[in-house]
Image 1: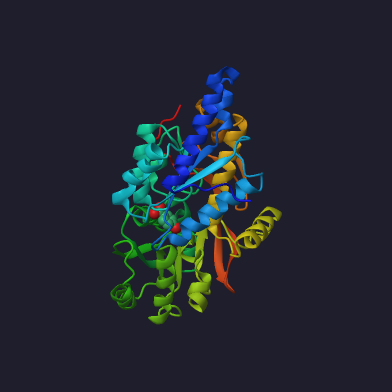
Image 2 (image 1 turned 120 degrees about the horizontal axis):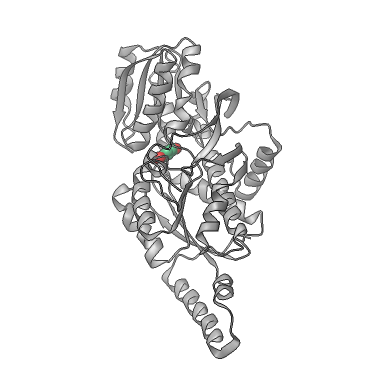
Amino acid sequence: MLPTEVSSRSSRRLILAQGAAVLGTAGLGLGLPALARAQSQRVRVGLMLPYTGTFAQLGNAIENGFRMALDEKGGKLGGRDVEFFKVDDESDPAKGVENANRLVQRDRVDVLVGTVHSGVQLGIQRVARESGVLNLIPNAGVHAATRAMCAPNVFRTSFTNSQPTLALGKPMVDRNHKRAVWITWKYAAGDEAFEGFKDGYTKAGGTIIKELGLPFPNVEFQALLTEIASLRPDAVACFFAGGGAAKFIRDYAAAGLKDRIPLYGSGFLTEGVLDAAGPAAEGIITTMHYSDSLETQRNKDFRLNYAKTFRLQPDVYAVQGYDTGLVLMAGANAVKGDLNNKQALYAAMRGVTVDSPRGKWTMSKAQNPVQDIYLRRVENKENKVIGIAAKALADSGAGCRLA
Ligand code: PHB
């Protein structure tokens, strides 16, 4: 059974009333110690994710994965029931702080799980640093979150934006694709994915002949595809995700480029979009910290349970949501549900080895995954592993000082 979900004002009143009843009984002299009283209340989990727009599917997959991790262990956190509060952040950075404050101040969540979009994460990061609320980032890769703006109460269970693309350049050069065009949405995720790509590709001997971009979440690719055709690079590399990625793949093929100029990408390009993109996606090579086809029992079990529960195939976002649940459970169990015991809670979360469908990974000192990066190729609507692009890859964590 899924844990209770509360998002309306009337059900909130109900819970506040129940809380008052518990305190009232204690006041009558039954003398429940403060800790037991706190423990008996539910853990308030805020989900701040995109449920509309080009990243809507990503938000849903993360929530599904997160709930599944908890439900596999009885739906509790450190022995306590869980109550969910949800906000659709619309991938809108302008509303990031306000939306995070809704969960932290209005709903008084114990933990904020979010988000997908790097710009929105900067808003959450500010609120997390100011309020001290525990924040688990299930996707957004913005470097600052685990570099200069890192915080003891902020943990990322996904990646930094340059992690997946750092390992993309070498396989391209190995295939004799030495002159490339880069194309992306122009915002932190695209710009930082480019940093990783540029570093790996130029070190491997490649040359980037042109950088192309368009504002997020624009999907009018036509003029840029015409420019690519006239530039005649050996290959194109890119960062796109969600609905925009499916459209880019289809438009790239429709423009007649698919068979002339091989398309590479950060693996998000082909995550959760293989049905929508159809044959246009076949053959695309990407690098990513997960692959559908990992032949481990852990991944097979995860995929089967996810498909049975949600009638959907899981993708990297579902895995990241699932791992977020695993990390939070590891912390909550270590402190027996007393999330106010922050030192012990954070120490447990920092020390986890996550037995994930992506393979085992650990937390870096800056609280970001140290993980393997796979080389994948789309074959028959599946991201097939064709090699390991990087082993135990850690982000630099530059500028992060945590005790
Ligand atoms: C981001 O904005 O950090 C982001 C969004 C979608 C992805 C990856 C990164 O697939």
